[in-house]
Length: 525
Image (cartoon, rainbow, N blue to C red; front, side, top):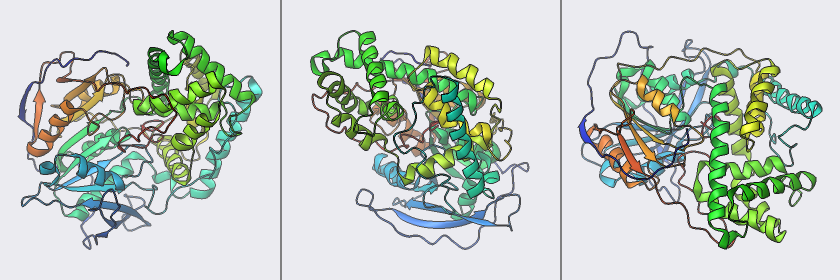
């Protein structure tokens, strides 16, 4: 799950990866193309080539003439003389908006590769600009929330009541939508997009939860897949209760890696050179915030929300370390409040994202309905991994009370899809390493590229030259690496350097937006 090293072992040769095949008779029938999509400019300052469109799809794909919903799409058009067709991108979640991601991917790929594709972004059903958009209970995460770690049975009962209230609000507000908020329905939406684009096949790039969506799409429509890239891979056998428990241990390990980094830079942060001592001071800060939230805003739960993004991406470490030092050494709460405001404070988009997250994950698979199971499992995990176990438990607890019954997850094992390219950091906390290994085994002829010693969530298009070269060649030519990385790994790529410390608590540069911080695997897959 969390390993550390840092040298390139093998680059490997490259073999052709494109396969041509006729559609399978067993595939679900795709919607017939209707009126061509009407694209209009929706440029942003950062992505001036973006165009937008909408597409009507059935709420229930088994009743194509029934109620329709609207999906919001984006596009950056190909500019090369010859097009390789659509490249549909997904940032994860479930609940992440993908429209801006099209601009990011098109501008981050080598220009010669991006020019060959229509890069297509999508707000999945219920998300962002798609309609209707879910927002079960606005302000559910408004500060200051109760401490996530229960002190006694009364605290636990209060947490349960709060989770049940959220689930009930979802049912009351979006009851007709919830039976159709699931990954299989989202995958069928993807194929409706493909049909509306008039493309016999699509290529796909998905991050985090987007890897699971991509694997489900490939299972339903294997011969509609031209090329597929899955980056930071969800364990398909863990959806979703077990995946969240695995995440708790991995997030704790990643938080300890952050604290060890702080200890190595004691000359800057003055918090001690012993990682265990630094960790003790962090938990002392947490305890103090229970008694007196910083700025009347940051209590223990908000502190965890603020530091959890540091487990997703170490670009946050300098600002988090400076805020920690300001509070613990200087008694200054302002940098901590600033960090919360800039990194973690909820807004309307996060309310929407969390509503979709719960709607999809609670519907996708069975969760324990006996709180005794949650209580046993999460106290056991907390004993070994206290950083975010109970925070994550309450984040997912509405699934114990969900108002629609669960589905059975699809078996994504696949020997019909063309070679799929997988990328994974071996210390990723949001989607632990084992998920990539398991998916690699399930997808015949897939290739696994691992960032050795990497802990950031999202490997490609984030500055790893080794990974980006492999991605670009695959998208340009269909070639996949065949190396001898051992233990099922085809290529090992070295990780990127850790961030440099900063002495002041200025805001850290925002990481590349390949997924939302909160919405990127179970807590965002």
